[in-house]
Image (tube, rainbow, N blue to C red; front, top):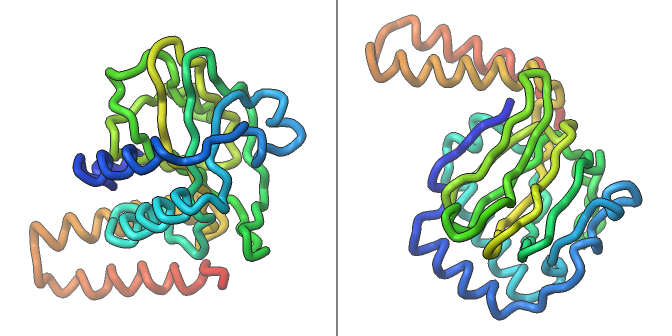
Length: 225
C-alpha cells in the first residue's frame, strides 16, 4: 500500500517546524545509513540527540496521534521517532531498501514494516527531489505539498532524485504495525474505510454492528503484540 495522507501538519505547524529546524545542527546524512545505503546517500540530517530534533520529532508524533487515517492504515505498534533530512542542490539518495530493524536511542527494536516521509518544503520551492518508489504496480514518483505524508512499504526499493534547485526538507520515520503481513493490513484498511462510508450513508443499520465485529475479529486474529 502506498498512501498519501493530506495535512498531517497545517501551514502554521509547518512554518513553526521549518523555522525551528533552520537553527539546528545539521550533519552528514550517512549517520543512520546501513552499509549498502551509505554508498547511495548524499544529504544532511539531524542527529537523534539534537534538542531541536527531539522537540520537533515529538511534534510530529503528536500530529500522528490525532490523524485517524494514519492510524487506520498503519495500525501502529511502534513508531521509530521521526528524523529530519535536508537535500540541497546536488544532494540525492540512490536506490536502496530500508533496514529491516531499527534501534532507537533507548535500544528498543522497531521492525520496519512501513516507511513514511512527511514533506516540509513546498513543492514549487525546489526542483528534483522526487521520492521514487518501485513496486508491483510500477514506479511511482511522489512530490507532496508541505505538511502531507506518504506511507509506503519499507520493503520497496526507493530513492530520492537529486535536487537541482532550492532545498527539500522532510521528516522520515518507520512504523512497526500490529499487523505484520501487508496483505492482511490492506484488507483491514479497506474494510475499515468501507465501514466508515456505510456508517455515513446508512447510520444505525444493524449490519454495521456485524461488520464492525468482523473487523475486530480479524484484527484480533492477526494482531502481534
